Length: 262
Ligand SMILES: Nc1ncnc2c1ncn2[C@@H]1O[C@H](COP(=O)(O)OP(=O)(O)O)[C@@H](O)[C@H]1O
Ligand SMILES: [Mg+2]
Image (cartoon, rainbow, N blue to C red; front, side, top):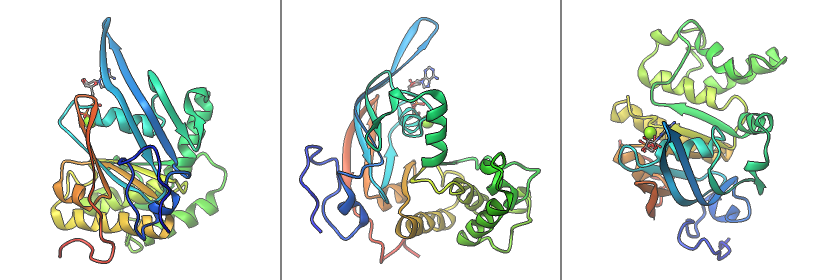
């Protein structure tokens, strides 16, 4: 199916058999227009984002690159509903996020977003299974949660490591636990900050394969900040931030069939 032409011309990926082409632009999960984010510290204003446009569609794979201090984490925080824009329009499924109460924003974040970090942030005193259950610890659905956590660990290839503690796992395995944890609430988007930053190339490739599977099988969009070229090359789009502005948005079509280099 051919994509609708749209006014965001060039920012969206062109046609293809990938799920994104069918869903763009009507079904963007989150989109932003002319988004500005300022921080005030000690009477000084830092403009971290100087009017950026973005949109994330189901099953999208977007890499965010750029030098240190260019606004990558700021952008991720806005996408993750961890912070609100100073000005501009950010919409989650068409709803202006600036109208959300804190409580609503927290709930939407929980329903919509999963987070994965470079340093995994697993709790050392909890098993892999318990770490995956963590985001749902306060929900009163322990049986369902356990079932889902086990399923997710199997999904990421760790079905035989449920009761292992983080220090009994390799870096790649820890990251896979963290990815399973990010999926416990069935998010629409996984936001990752340097998810392969601490991993060797082979292990990083496995993480990319996993992201591909999640996109294909569960329609999860992945937005990742990265300094690794091979990660950016696997993405559908590369958003380059330079000093708070989007300098360039490229489509480098990932080929699902081919997969990463052996
Ligand atoms: N909480 C904050 N308070 C003040 N300034 C901040 C804060 N967070 C980020 N900044 C500033 O905003 C700019 C962008 O930061 P950031 O988004 O973290 O960049 P990146 O992730 O690309 O390294 C930088 O100049 C940084 O110093
Ligand atoms: Mg950062």
